[in-house]
Image (cartoon, rainbow, N blue to C red; front, side):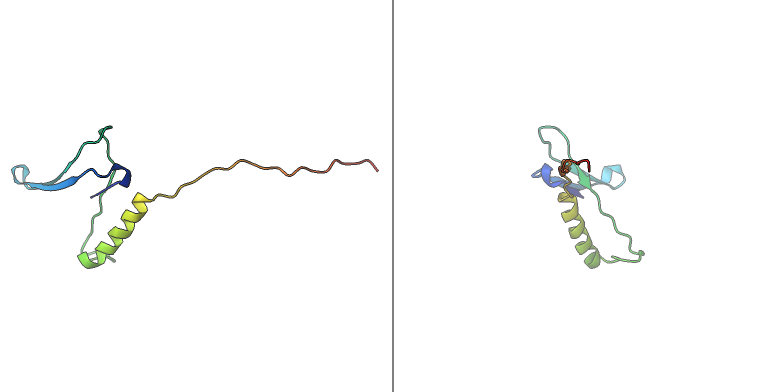
Length: 89
């Protein structure tokens, strides 16, 4: 689980809760707006790529960089070139 960069330094603590049949949970700190964004990365050992922890880790690190640095798009204004005045011939 990866928390979005703007929400750090929230802390996500992993817990396996035996009382709930071994469910996997996360305890996440609270910020002023009581919100957070997250990315969950999962792997499948029988997949075509990244089938081991050693091969999956670089993929997750790359995905985290993309997640925390989304593309920024800015819209500019339209500029028009002035046309010379037409003259009658």
